[in-house]
Amino acid sequence: MPNIKSAKKRVELSKIQNERNRMEKSALKTKVKKFEAAVASGDREQAAAAYQVAIKAIDQGVTKGILHKNTAARKKSSATLKMNAMA
Image (cartoon, rainbow, N blue to C red; front, top):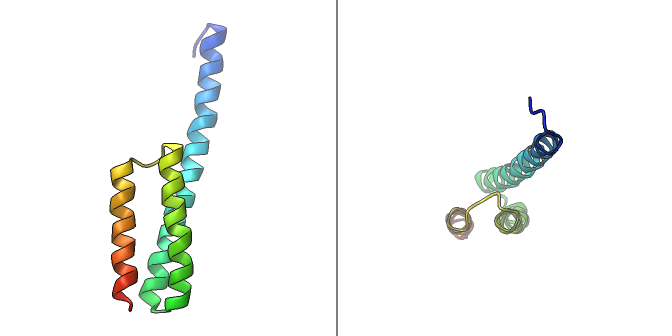
């Protein structure tokens, strides 16, 4: 454990930020999985709604630094292909 006050503070802040990032990443994964489940079930309306939520979450993930922009582009492209294949 650190002895210097500023180092102690950094450890605490790091824990808080780590937990926040983990929650954000988990929420993002959940939204993407819900979209994929809707596509698998074949319900177009439910999939369309889940698609909008998933794309928005992916974009927010990039803004918050959870995802790299190329990873987000790949995930969005994959989701769009799955959505279009349902038509």
